[in-house]
Every structure is written in structure tokens, then in C-alpha cells.
Image (cartoon, rainbow, N blue to C red; front, top):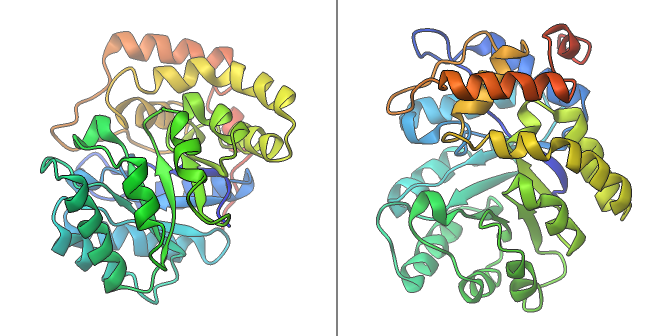
Length: 304
């Protein structure tokens, strides 16, 4: 089962907006060293919305190559067009990825019937395991528990990344699905509570720059040591929140550069650089929780 701290990996780019393989390798090694349980490549945090299909596929395949079997890779394959979601999914068959993370169709605002048919069509197009991804604040539609339980009956839909922050969802779904259905939080601020209620882990933005801490937090939670897990979580809470002070991944990409994990915090329009005000606050937070200066991260990084 997928569990623990799974990073929603940023996609590093150079100053011209091209994928930076050197920084990507550094990030992967950092996560392997710090016990991250899996990597989501080209999800929301990986800027899937501004990569074309060819770039999208290339980043996933490069990540697979650089990981070299040392850490499981999950591919983001969501789209607002069902045909495009199928196309992306089929690109990764027999590639070595362990699952696809498929976001609800954005902008279209489909009905629950439309959502069911969308995910059913993708599921039937491939043997790859599928993880549903529900994030209404970004997509404009909500995959309701009743629809999730219906989709969970399809053979290769294995779990859900639930990013609503609504902790009641885990109860509403869990009672109607098999015991091996995977529940992954998509919200760092409520992830510990989510795991305490029976969740298996978190697909984390914070883990991009606090991989060791998120690994420890999740490992403790999965051992049901919620007292010590909460101590770590309370220390990280201000970071969880500031990383969404501006649209993700603007803050986390800037922070990753600040602490030396990537060489550039380049984003593609319409995403714009982090504001000076948030830079000031985030710098102080990084110092306060021990993630700054740069050389504090280097001890966790080894070459492949």
C-alpha cells in the first residue's frame, strides 16, 4: 500500500523555463535520503497546467530514470478532457510508474454522473492503478463521497487523494469501500488529523523542503504515536500555511531555491514570482524551524 509522506514534487526549471535535470536529480536524491515514501511527478505542484503533453511525459520519464528504482514514482495524469487523460495514462503503461494520480476535470464543472463516466473511461483504458484526486478549490468541481464509493468498485481505482480539508469525508467513504482502499490527504494542515482518523498518509507540498520532518511525522502517525507526531506538526504548521499564502507552487518553489535544493525558482506564466512581503515572512519561518541557511540541507543530499 502507498502510505506515509509522499511528495508532490516541484518541477525545477532554469531561467529560460526549461526543465532542469540537475536540480531534479538533486531533489530526488534529497527525498530518497530523507525517507520520502514516493514521488508524485507532474501533479499540481509540478506545474502540470503549464507543461504541454510532451514535456509532461518527459518529466515523468526523466524522474523515473533518475530515481532508478530507489523510490516509487506516481505520475500525474489528470486533464479536463477525458480523451487527453486517457492519452496521458496510456503513455505510462509498462514504464515503471506504480500508479496514476488523476485530478477531477477542471473548468468544465461536470455533474457527478460526468465525473463517474470520466474516471470510468480512464480506468477502462489502462491496467495502471488509478488514484482519484479531489481538489475543488482548484478545479471548480467536487467529487462527492457517494461517487467515490461507486468508483471504488472499479478494479484498478485503488484510492483517493482528498484535498478538501473536510475530515468527515474519510468516514463517509470508508464505511462503503474495501479495507485496502487507500486514503491519502492532499492538505498538509489537516494531514495528521486525517491519518488519526484512518488515513494512510499525505501527498505533501511541505515535504518538498521539509522531507525529513514530514517522514518522521507520518511514520509516527502510522505507528499511532500521535503525541509525538503532533509535536512535529505543530512546529511545521506555520510552514504548511505560508506555503499557500500565494498560489501553489509559487512559495514552495521559492523556498526550495532559498535553501539550496534547486538552482532557480522560475515559473511559467500565468504564475508569477513570490511577493517581497511573503519572501520576508517565509525566510523568517525557514530560519525559525531550522531549514535555513542552505548548508543545513546539503547534509541530506548525496549523488546518485
